[in-house]
Length: 217
Ligand SMILES: N[C@@H](CCC(=O)N[C@@H](CS)C(=O)NCC(=O)O)C(=O)O
Image 1 (cartoon, rainbow, N blue to C red):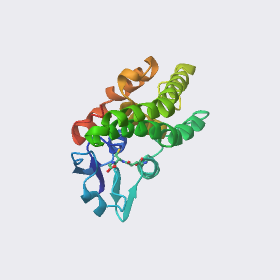
Image 2 (tube, protein in one colour; image 1 turned 90 degrees about the vertical axis):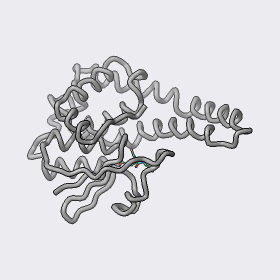
Image 3 (cartoon, helix red, strand yellow; image 1 turned 120 degrees about the horizontal axis):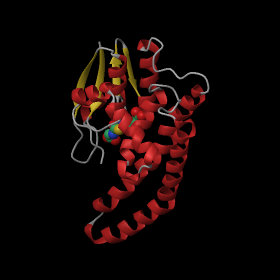
Image 4 (cartoon, protein in one colour; image 1 turned 120 degrees about the vertical axis):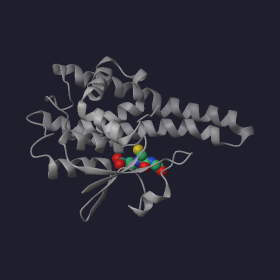
């Protein structure tokens, strides 16, 4: 049976939601983040990089959430979760955009916020000033641009899902996590409504029940 190595409050939520949508039988092996937020060492026994998500399915062990989402849809999708027509281009784009462009900004924002608290006490105010400046210079205005870009994407054609179809496709399984990580308060009306649409899906609710509480902020 397919196993999901699930780290709490992590990208493995993408995989649980997808498996619930496709009604694929699976088991969950749960891992808890260390107090500093890192994955526990046991994940290194499953994959050399020790980052979540990881799945095992028969002889295959696979990491990298985008690859896992595609693998599962290819193997178990039976034609579901596929974009059609013009939506294929959007789906392809958002699949790569999310981990390639949006997530790095959000991860940088997180890391730049954490570093000052870990600096020696006396230099902490200086570290905070420097990292706030770094955030301002390299993250803040770019996130504003991403927000406007994403709002406009959903506005055009009043799209419910990234590919414009009537259900989630690869790009959605990728994007929703980044929006959760970004934080609801920062999102515009189309993105707020989009996340609500995800949360309202029975499969998403089942994924939360099985995976446990999911909280990124
Ligand atoms: N690009 C990878 C990122 C994997 C990743 O960084 N996972 C995070 C959880 S969201 C993790 O395992 N963090 C724990 C750590 O850095 O020790 C993917 O999409 O799967």
